[in-house]
Image (cartoon, rainbow, N blue to C red; front, top):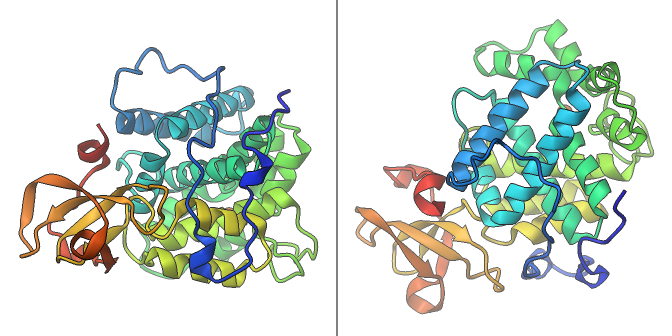
Length: 343
Ligand SMILES: [Fe+2]
């Protein structure tokens, strides 16, 4: 078992001021390479977004087949693969999460688990969790909604409100998810507890048990789940501007160190956010920089509102190219894929 710290403890950033001050620049290259990665049959020459899609497909088949005797090994392999892909380009991991990109063939709930796991890893690294515990957190994120994967898919195609039976399944899914893990021979106490408690709230008021004391890993999962849902919405719909998502999270998760580290890691303008520059151009944030207010942006719409054939990469600084604020997706006629920006 590895015990080495992922980041120097000095990178911890306690919240001691207004939200904007909390969104300090991310540390460079916070996560060291993981040597023992899960190999996917020599497909590493493929573009990174393609590798993400194949991981989503693989994770989907593992989760949908559970309970199964091979789940523990498969999930461990998928977690290591996720860490490898996140480390190769953390900005792409966040971009995909914020854009809520996924192939239609993969269930939405599986993709949400994948994105939540990516965010969880980045934040665990920022907080200095050791690698073994970071991997457990990733696996807990993969599996926290096991008990409602099929139901999530059904509800997304259902016009009416959930039936009483469906509501009961939603209420109990932390317990049923953990039961499926146990039935697959998984006995890691922290992983199981994190899944069972991921909708509990410190002080009570969560579900299904209304526990007053909630374990640290469950607090981490809840923060990631809530924030990524606010930021990404459902396929880009119902998504909140990043600053609003961060503010809402920090209000409901007051005192949760993981929630604070999460909004700090993602920054003021996370990759995937659509922004308007002072000169009127609109583009997608593609890369964070040391200055959280000035990420790199791929401009997709000119100052006259015309779509550009080829995105133009801008360093967002100064009176002309600085970021004026969030832009509405509706203003961009041709949404852009990660392949075009990150391949
Ligand atoms: Fe859940």
